[in-house]
Amino acid sequence: MNDKIERRRNRNAGALAPQEQAGFWSPFQQLSRLRNEIDRFFGSPLEGFLSPTSSSMYEGWAPSVDLYEDKDNFVVRAELPGMKKEDIEVTASGDTLTISGEKKREQEVKEGRDTYRAERYFGRFQRSMILPTAMDTGKIQAQYKDGLLTVTIPKAEEAKRKQIEVKVS
Amino acid sequence: MNGSAQTQNQQRPMPMEPQRGQRGYVAPPANIAASENEYVLEIEMPGVEKQGLEVTVEGNELTIIGRRKQDLPEGELLYSETPLSMDYRRTFELGLDVDTSKIRAEMDQGVLKLHLPRRENAKRRKIEVSG
Image (tube, rainbow over all chains, first blue to last red; front, side, top):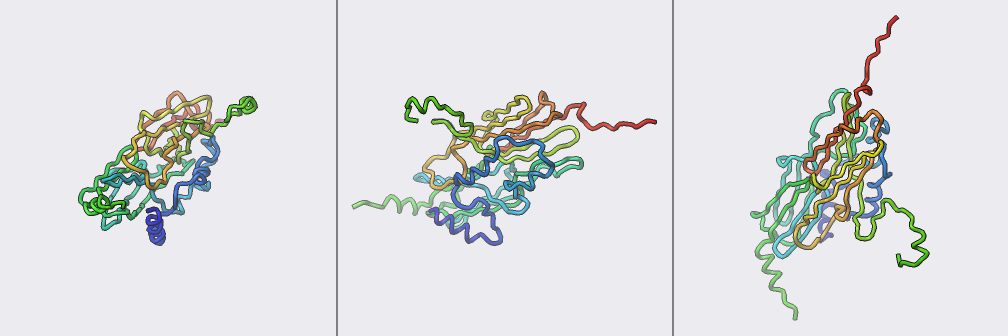
């Protein structure tokens, strides 16, 4: 399963390349996000642009996702804080589910507004996942709440039947 | 941890280390912009609703804690990239020109937006030079 996701992401690594957080979530990634416990509110203007934790100017981004499975469904949950529902697109074809869209800045930097920190990612993104079994693409549902996109993907009937037929001798 | 007399005597504080049964913290990404009248701080905390927020000011330290709503989807977790077992916390040292009594907060789709007004007397004033 995870191999499949990995392979898919590597295949995408060219033009679309939203692979900033490749692989599993790891404690090491976490460490860099923790940084110093207290941040200076006013370091110097533009400090955020230069810090290693903020490279949004130079890299694409992709939302972090979790994948759940129960008897009838897969559920993909993606972190997409601060978006508009209309700017999120979910598509399914074959065994591939794709989440894409554009995270827009709420307001352009106004004149007289200084930026002290810029750690949030903005811009277009795309993330594809290959699911382990066929899906019922007609019945996929997506909900966006509290900055989380939850996509519920019913398994195709034949995939479900296949599961039930397995017998242990 | 085994409860021997020696380890009990040591009791060192470990601020970021989650205690048994408690959740750890992750520092969420923030944007800060300033205008003449206020600072605007935006912090991304997906999975946190208004009820899960705790914003406190102590002296000139602003602390923001966002606790994740625990409504995980049904089923088995097959693959995960998000810090599911963590809550969000970040502390900022405020400048003296922030009027901490008038901080305003909004929460929308997992993004907390704080408006921190600058004190009247801290705003830039043009001094006429006479003579």
